Image (cartoon, rainbow, N blue to C red):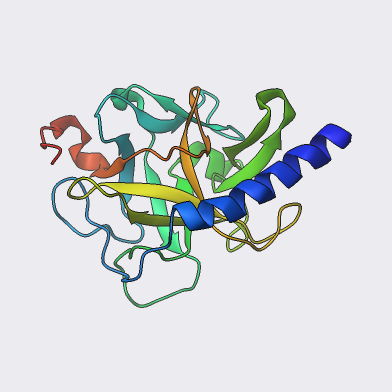
Amino acid sequence: MKITNFLVLSFLLFAFTATSIFPRAVHAEAVIDAFGDEVRTGDRYIIGAASNDFAVTSSPIICNSDVFLSPMSNGLPVIFSPVVESNDSVIHEDSNLNVDFDAATCRMAGVSTMWKIELRPTARGFVVTTGGVAGLNRFKITKYEGGNNLYQLSYCPISEPICECSCVPLGKVVNRLAPSTVPFPVVFVPSDRASKIEYKMM
């Protein structure tokens, strides 16, 4: 119990510290995919590293799985949707988002593929996993400095056992996606074009 309380308090301290290090974007511009098109609600995307060597995926089980990083060819498509419903189908920077893996087998089984943050004592901290609830597990996409169409992902806590506090950048921690002081740049690749990744990182 003491270890769990310590980890939660450590996460809160990190969240507040991250605010001063990684300020939120001022202008809500459209998020642009790896081919120069606007990222849209409901479309399927592979989240790939800017280095083009790995992508976001789940374990082979998919349902009830942590979010892992694996070779680009194994990327599992995600779907972005705004927490607040809008008639605008374009995904904007710094907007609160739900993120879901597109896994039909899990939906048929009634299992949520929505991303959330969960404490993993064995991993010595919080990790991104599935099983989230719409509106309670908010993520954001913000511009990553240093290149065109490069972005970073952040988690924005709202519910217990964490709190409603500042967004925390996500990065690569071992082979998982997790809160990190070192966010990494990502691109969004339409899943139907993932086999044609010949874009040039600027």
